Image 1 (cartoon, rainbow, N blue to C red):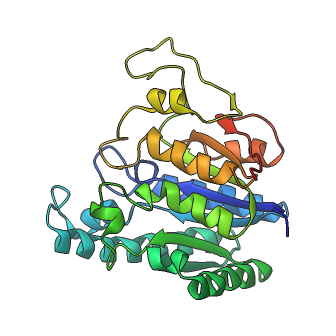
Image 2 (cartoon, one colour; image 1 turned 45 degrees about the vertical axis):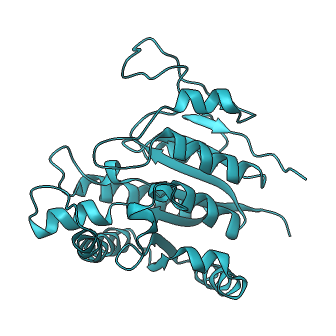
Length: 267
């Protein structure tokens, strides 16, 4: 069975869902819900992979800074996930779409029976026109929060795993940067955006640098790892700026936006 041509996975990161004060960015929730609803109305099957549970939870709990202890991080994740789903349900509902929550642990992907059940759940939801909203289950899983070499690095890798699982044609990772540049644009303002990449190699990882923004943990390296996993299965991966989710209108039409990592099936 090949890729589903009208199926798209969109990943939105913590930095796109919170503002500079670390609080919930309501405009961002509204805009991503509106654009994805529009994309679905065009006949696409949409899956949203959303980070932000811990950051939003910290804001909701009135914490001055991100907690250091595991139990408080997981408590913040539990509060934040509830708030995130409340906001997504509110905004998607205003645009006429029903959502569903799917929380994953690593074992859900690694065990064949769970993996099959998960695939069936995704397919059933999409057949009903429902938009699944996916996150790692941070309130019980510590792998994404603490692990040095995470299976799901700030949900970048999770979004690629989901895209492969549901055989999506496209994966779009909305970041706090326009795409992959020839050099870090924070230190090299003249650096040019790379519009298309057909091969992910060691030189690209050297360009990727370290961690991302102070509110999110996934830097360009985790995005490259996600792109490498997905493109090997023939999935087109685009990294673009989360402040402009309307770029998705171009992406579903095949119009260039951000950096495209072209899918290629490997034997």
